Amino acid sequence: MYHKSSRMSTGQRLMCPILGIASCIAFIYVSFSDLSFGDYHAEQKMDFVRRNGTHLVVDDGKMFYVNGWNSYWLMDQAVDEYSRPRVRAMFQTGSKMGMTVCRAWAFNDGDYNALQISPGRFDERVFRALDYVIAEARRHEIRLLFSLVNNLEAYGGKTQYVKWAWEEGIGLSLSNDSFFYDPSIRQYFKDYVKVILTRKNTITGVEYRNDPTIFGWELINEPRCMTDNSGDTLQDWIVEMSAYVKSIDKNHLLTVGLEGFYGPNSPKKPTVNPGEYFSLLGSDFIRNSEIQNIDFASAHIYPDHWFKNQDFEEELKYVALWTRSHIDDGDRILRKPIMFTEFGYSTLNKDFDPSKRDRFFKTIYDVIYKSAKKQGAGAGSFVWQFWVGGMEKYNDDFGIVPWERPETYKLITQHSCRMARIRGSAELKGNLKELCSQ
Ligand SMILES: *[C@@H]1O[C@H](CO)[C@@H](O)[C@H](O)[C@H]1NC(C)=O
Ligand SMILES: *[C@@H]1O[C@H](CO)[C@@H](O)[C@H](O)[C@H]1NC(C)=O
Image (cartoon, rainbow, N blue to C red):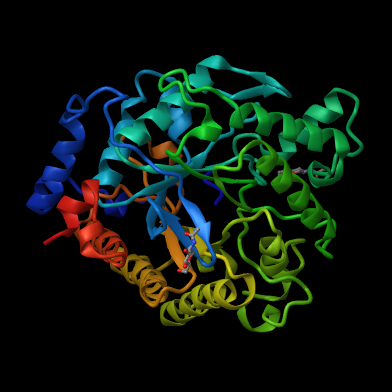
């Protein structure tokens, strides 16, 4: 998503006293239990999540299903002392809700509090913030899906890379898409990837590539390459970059970061894409996800941005169709797990109501659960997006403070439990054991 907007959904901002007891307790827990964890070395062993056919597996081949969320802002907020507690508060809440993976940005290219100040130059202060995010996630038994660059302009993105190459006098073009085809820019990106993967965490002492707290890497958030709608340019870039990541790090899962549209030659273009336009963005869900070094396929779900004024019941039908279609591709064509790494219901909808958002979430959750239960390729989903109080400017028209609405909190938590129980109640571990064993 864009998350540039500072618009806020004031209608939903409720105060603690009018919430149910459970939410109040959740809030208090978040605020005051900061000191109750041991040191970083005293934790249980954590295993890498891997892929076996259409399933994600962990701990000697046991299936792994994800109820996850997005908090793109974690590194950014961990830089400054005043905002750092938000990172811990977020992990505590996610963990308490039985969520096991969080997706976040592992990049900030040239923006305020940049991690990469200019090509190959890093701000150690910001890198330490990323170290902190990983160490905190580990303490809360949360894994991280990290995205490595943005297609969009927020936090630098491909526009920043193109600008750098131009300023250094080596860029071929000012087109944003030269990010994908300019050899110098490809090298910039590879250099970046190498520094990240081989970074030794200053808190835990573990290199990122050897850290099972990291669930996996995502090459790029929502890639589009509209200057080549044959799709060849983006395809070539994914082939090269996925091989490069794997040449350094064979421990971690890798995904592309696609929105999930079908390309111009896909039989599903007319029936599943939101419209003709979406086949012309230079990506193709099947072709891009088929690449050998891509371990699982990913897609996003944003009908509010893809259609204008869609009727709500129609929207739910479409969402179920879109979700089922991609899982079906995972089962039949790709033979890989599929994760919906972003989905959201916009507060800008003219008849927005949080109970509609709950139904929207439930529709997606139900399709994924149904697939997972019969051991299909539907492996999980990540809400876009969670934030905590005091950081309104990081919100967009999709953000949720998870403890503000008890119905939503309960819906998400129950989904955590049913996904976790698929592998057997005896297998519930850590936070999930207490939360889900009743
Ligand atoms: C992968 O799954 C198959 C079928 O469930 C199983 O027989 C096999 O042992 C698994 N392989 C690994 C490496 O876990
Ligand atoms: C690149 O993308 C940015 C952000 O979308 C846009 O403002 C800019 O005009 C684009 N540059 C070119 C040359 O198209």
